[in-house]
Each structure stands twice: as structure tokens, then as C-alpha cells.
Length: 185
Image (cartoon, rainbow, N blue to C red; front, side, top):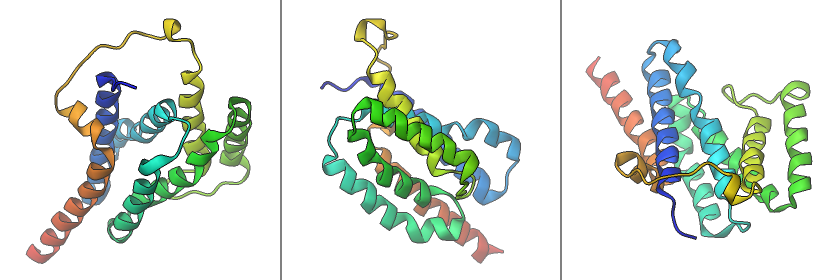
């Protein structure tokens, strides 16, 4: 399937919001900004569910490698980067199920939010699967009923093409900046 630039732009926007969210946490900026930046995870997961290709493939292994490479830095920075990657990688195979089972698992995910809370820095596993399932469900909508998407380009499109590289590298950059600041103090 041909790449759709609009999806890369939306994914790039989600990554930009996520990076800003982590910067806000690490440097203790105003929490009001996080009302906007917390949209990053739902936006990215809906897009991931929509773009899922009914096979796990090479990208699936890359997600696990990104989680392992990010783990030490995310722990030091106290951001939810690794739990989200691990939850995402663990739940992604469930998108291989037929759509009616995906919806049933999404309902269980929604029930988990309220009945069996497992909060990892504000995120619940149920959130991740509900948003992945929404993307997969939207994929079932006939093409002629969807909104038209144009071509955008620019830096956000570039960011959307390389989400794992940016996800891992931004954590290491934040770690280095925080470490430099502590040395200067």
C-alpha cells in the first residue's frame, strides 16, 4: 500500500506532542501544557490501529528493541515511555483477531480501566487497546465514506515516517540534557 502523507503528518504531530509532554515532565514546566500534550498517546494508538496490516512483521520486533534500549533512560527520567511500548507490543497481536473479537477485547480493556486499575504513570493497559481497537474499527469503514486526505509534507511528515527512532532518541537527548544540568548546578 502506498504511504499517505496525512497519516505521517498526524503521527509526526503525535510524536511532537509526546516529546513536549516528556520535556514538561522532566523539566517541571507548567502542568497546564499537559492538557494538550496528553493527546499524543491516544492519537498515536488510533493511527497505529488504523495502519495495522494484519501481520506483525519486522516492525513488531523493532518495538521490543526500542523498549529495551529506552528502559534505562525512561526509568531515570521518570516518563512512561517504556511501559507504553511494552503494553503496545504486548497488545498488538490481539489486532490479528477477527474484528468482533477485537471489539470484545476492547470492551474488556475499557472494563479494566475502572475495575482493575493498573496505572503506569497515568496510563492503563486498557487505554492502549481501546485506542488501537478504535483505529482498527475505523479501518472497516468503506473507503468512500471516509474523509478525504491530502498531501502535506514537511517536518511532521518526516517525523511520522520514523516514529521509533525519534521515540528512543528523544529520551536519550532528554537524559543527556538533564545530566548536563545536574553537573552545571
